[in-house]
Image (cartoon, rainbow, N blue to C red; front, side, top):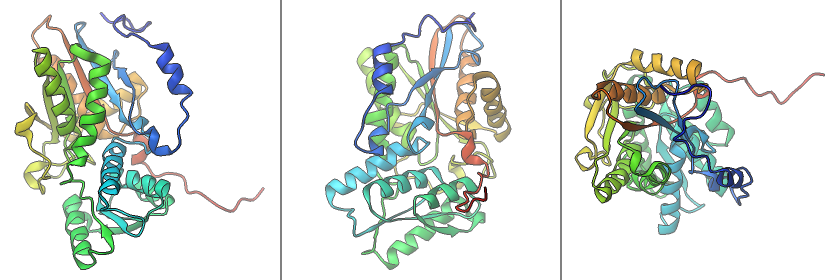
Amino acid sequence: MVSKEHPPASVQVDLSRATARARRVVESVLDLVGDTPLVRLSRMEERPNVEIWAKCEFANPGGSVKDRAASQMVKDALASGALSREKTLIDSTSGNTGVAYSMIGAALGFPVTLVMPSNVSAARKQITSAYGTRLVFSSEMEGSDGAIHLVREMVAKEPERYFYPDQYSNESNPKAHYLGTGAEIVQALGDRITHFVAGIGTSGTVMGTGRRLKEHAKKRGRPIRVVAIEPDDAMHGLEGLKHMGSSIVPKIWRPEECVDERMAMPTDEAWDVTDALGVREGLFLGHSGGASVAGALRIARSLPAGERACIVAILPDRGDRYFLPLKWEKHYEW
């Protein structure tokens, strides 16, 4: 059994690297994107030979996995000349990518407009506004697809005004995870990894990371199974994830390239695991992270007794992004 008192023997702590990270000095907040930690979910593990690890994407400076894709899309657009400080970056978002765009726009000095469903969490609305971003709301009844339709209409009316990265179609989205997330997992766990689990939103995380892991698997001559999690119903409660059967399918979603399995996840199961991660691991997460770990637990239970495995799940963001934050007041009475 895995000891609950001491770190597992398999965890090799590189103190020099940890010290260097703690003392890291950077030129910009954008230099903090990526290189997120992996944490072992030892108290969630149910079999002694099956390790479950979580990639802590909430440790990015904007608070989510979307920092990676947004920064790569902006970087590539600046390099190509498609984006300049004279243009406004505009995109549709359910929240996390919008926060990332807003942070990057503020750091680099260009305006950002976001189109999002009116029922996204108050936290996302307030966080993006705090960066100076302009918000445009689409119908809550149309979900993320309604936001996509509206942003396309706006860009078509004023194409010279906007740079529209279109996170659902932009190859820089999965590229960020091929270069970053996947490479970091390989560097940390090497040949031990056997499974990778991530939710489907834009699909950039699972596609880019999956490609990188499949390359590594081919080189080592042993498979890595890539599992994509999606809600089991169109009317789901897993914000940030897409039910593909009822949604506009992202152009970057090409599962035949690297995805071995699509796993349908009920809202209740994902929420229950999210709650358990808080109580048992001290991780306060969004429900998309709970969905990924729920998928990892399903995989662990399905393996033959005694089989060794190393499963990595993505934790896209923190739970506080889903709650109403305190209102910032500029006036104080002492």
